[in-house]
Each structure stands twice: as structure tokens, then as C-alpha cells.
Image (cartoon, rainbow, N blue to C red; front, side, top):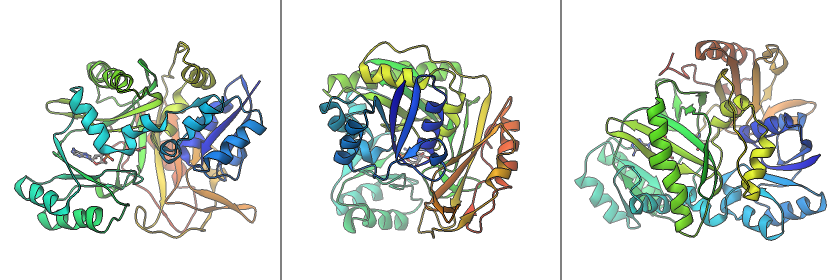
Length: 419
Ligand code: AMP
Ligand code: GLY
């Protein structure tokens, strides 16, 4: 029986822990740092996801058989490299391969070089030059900070004034740190998340999901890390999936090998079905959050075997998906994705979980005085499983209504494109 360490402490990691707890091969799960919900299914270890050396020491001391890495910050900090060098089995890409997410500029250049369909772009370091380029172009325009910004580094100005303000934040005031800006053509169409298990050139697709990036109903308000998701995505056809696999995911995996940074882990394609075909909006180097919370509950295969195949470079086992579908609502702190308060009591969770086809993944919670309090921007992901997306929607929304907290909001229109 195997001991597994999961690195991270959000809803994604809760869903990974939940999937690992269904494995017949896993006897013990640790999660660093975990959260109040994860603590019910794993032993939480008080180490931050970026304490790479301490995490390695923990894994060595505790005879961890396999480590699965959730967050991009840990991967960009080189956690997979450090674990591999220490002879530890790890599921997650190297720091070099994580650049596909941590640098928008790297990702865009790679796509340009290997003819992967994506929006036209130009990269700038100089505020004046970026401003001049935007002034000559059309609106809306897409401005992307070239670094990790927790899903908040993308701004889509409608006017020159808004563009000027965003470019100032990114290039003059270094709001996210010193960096470059990618200015991109604005594309339209439904987006979907295509996550694949990748080991070098071996690419195994997961079932599709769709996130909802904007904070408010009607896709209004600022971009967030994601406010809700469902799986699968009926508006995306088998042909679209085939195209995305053959013309985007497989060629990118091969390109990473050619560039000397083979990818191992979850390659996440944030794709858009535009009027001129499927195009890449972004790549991530890890499971999506909240997508993982709707995708992994549908996984019928043993996730330990899948992680092992990628970690060891052995052939991928069959990856099977349930015919049941899922939909989930994020409950976030008022003010998110801007500043928000922490420490508000959350109750009613047991009541919300009285329906066995509802799962609640904790995204940002902490234990306090025997209860649970909010500790992050996104706090809970409430997921319903059912035969149809409408039923999954209704179950999840019903459960959301049973959660009590005086500082949470959610979007009730998750799934509007398909319901
Ligand atoms: P990203 O972090 O690159 O995924 O961008 C966040 C969100 O901004 C995406 O999910 C899209 O909704 C939107 N977005 C990014 N790039 C574009 C684009 N080129 N055209 C239209 N919308 C975009
Ligand atoms: N939900 C989008 C992401 O994980 O980046």
C-alpha cells in the first residue's frame, strides 16, 4: 500500500485527495498545506507549497511513494526538479516545462514557432511602445501580464483610457512584479478546458469541462480564477475534440520535447471555439481549478496508476469516465477577486451534504474553535453529480442554498451556455 503526498491547499487539491482516496493502492494521503475540508480525508502537513526543500525532506523522512503537485507556483519554484533529483517519484512538470504557464511570452513564441492556432500577438517591455501599439489597433484588445498572477493578469480594455490604466499597472507600477506584457488579438466564441495527462509525447485526454472566468452573472465583472464549472461540454463536438488533440495538444507536447523541456503532468489547454476554428487562449501546467472539481469525480480509473505512469514514464493505463455529469458553483468571499475579509464562520455544510450526489470541495477554509471559517478569495466549490447537466445544476444550487455564511457570493448562472 502506498503513501502519497499532495502539494497545495485549494479545491483542486481537495478533488485530487478525494480521487486518491478512492484508489485501492493508496493507504495514506498527506496534503501540504491542505485546508479544513481536506483534513477530513488526508493528514495536513503545515508546509507551504513553495517550501520546496522542506517538502522534499518531509517526503524522504516519511517514505512517500509518490507526490502530486497542484499549484503552478510550486512547479514554477522547481518542486518537481528538486524531488526528481532526490530520487522521489513526482507527478508534475519541471520548472523549465512549467514556463508554458508561467511565461505567456514563452507559450506564445512556442505556438508561433510550431504553428499552433492562437490569437495574433506582440510582446512589450516598454510602456510607451505598448501604448503606441494598442492605440493603432482595435478594441477590445487583450493585455496579458507575462507571469503568474493567479488568473488576474489578463485585462480586456474596451477603451484607450482603460488600456492605458492597465498598461500602467503592469509596466510602470509593477503591480504583479517586473515583467513584460503580451498584447493579443481579441477572439470570440465559447471557451473550454481540455486537460490531458502528458508524458513527453504520450498524450491522454481527459473529459472536457468549462469554467466561468468572470466574477458576476452574465459574464460581467473582472476575471477571476474561475467561478464555476461543469463537465462534459455538449456544445463542443467530437470533431472539435479530435482537432484539439491532433492539432494543439499533441503538437505542443512534441514541441516541448523538441525544445528540450519535455512535459510531464497535466497540460491544460484553455481553448476557444472561434468562428475560424479552435484556438489556444492559454496553457496551464497543472490541473485547472475549479475544473478539477468537476472532472475528477467522473474519473473511474485509479488515479494512482495514472500518476504513476506519468511519473515513471511507463505506458498509460486505460482512462475511463463516468456517464454521469457534474456541475459546480464556487462560493467566494465578497470583494474577490479584489481584497476581501477572512475569518467568517461557515455553517450548514452537513445539511448541504445530505444529498449523497453532492460534494463540497474546500478552496479556502480554515478550522477555528471546532468550526470552519473562510480563509481565501474562493472558499467552496459545491458540485452536483447527476444524469443531466440540468439536474446536476439544480442539486448543486440547492446545496449552495444550505451553506450559511455572511460574506459569500456566487454566480447562479453557471452552465448558462448549455441549459
Ligand atoms: P487567460 O489567463 O490567458 O486564460 O485569460 C483569462 C481570460 O481572458 C480567458 O479565459 C478569456 O476569457 C479571456 N481572454 C484571454 N485571451 C483572450 C483573447 N485573445 N480573446 C478573447 N478573450 C480572451
Ligand atoms: N480555472 C482556470 C485555471 O485553473 O487556470
